Structures are given as structure tokens and as C-alpha cells.
Image 1 (cartoon, rainbow, N blue to C red):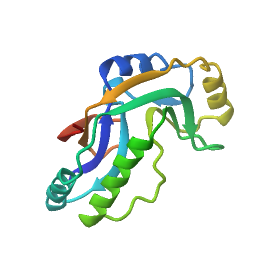
Image 2: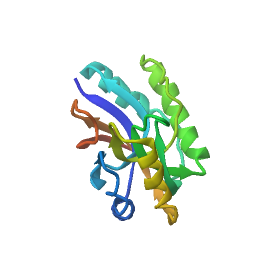
Image 3: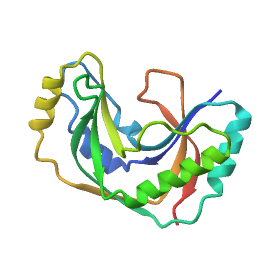
Image 4: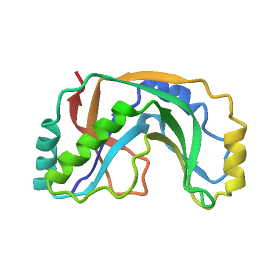
Length: 178
């Protein structure tokens, strides 16, 4: 039973730039740069028949142009109980539209609705038992974040092994944005 999600790949040069932010936060489990991505829609563990349906439904999306994506800073999820440090993206109108379309298509395929609000980001580290003060200090000391921009020419369907997260991820299908 594959665990699937859709996402935008991060180019190697952007991944290299983001990897320079690794370290300096005790208790963080850093994601390997080759596993950086922007999750569009988590699908979860599904059977092979549903996986085939997902591939078909994603192929029925409307044509889109490549997406310009800007990464403009660091942030964290979890507030008083931080669980991840991430690079945030800005100017996400087209990315939000793509995610919304995928949500509609996957619901038509029979998947339950996604319950979490879509927040486009690239997870850099997963956190467990890390102080919110340490996370705030980590982000504050990296305040000078150079904007990073790239163009996404496709989105992909990833699979992952059942694990705590962080990869390795395998591209099962690719869908061009042109």
C-alpha cells in the first residue's frame, strides 16, 4: 500500500542554498536537501486501485503555465510546541490554485478532504522536544534571508515508505505545467 502525496520539486541549486541553514538548533532532525519539496496534497496510504485512480484524476487537470516560486524566509510550525522549521514561500496565488484544483480532483476520486489549511513551505527540519525559545533564536539569528526564486515546470506524485518522515521520496508520476 503506497503512501502518496503531490508536490513541487526543489531544484538542486535552491536545495543547496537552503541546506546552508542546517545546524545550530539542538534537537532538530534535518531533512536531506535531495528530499526538499513543497507538498501540494497529502494523500496517505492507499491501495493500488486507488493509486491508479489518483494518477488518472491528476492527469485530468487543466493546462497551466509554469509557476514562479519565491522563497523568502524561515518560520516554524507548532507555536509553543514547535514541530518543524521551514522555508516559507510568498506570492502563492497560482500555487494555491493548483493545490485547490488537486483537492477537487482527488475528492472526485473518492479521497476524503484535506483537513489542514494549505501553507506552501519547504520543511528543513522536524523537531521533537525543542524549546520554542531555541526555535525563535534560531530564526532570529538567520534574519538576513536572501530571496530565492525558481520556476516549477511540473508537479509530481511522490511515494514514501512508512516512516517518521523526511524521505526518501520516489517520483511515481510527473505532470507538466506547460
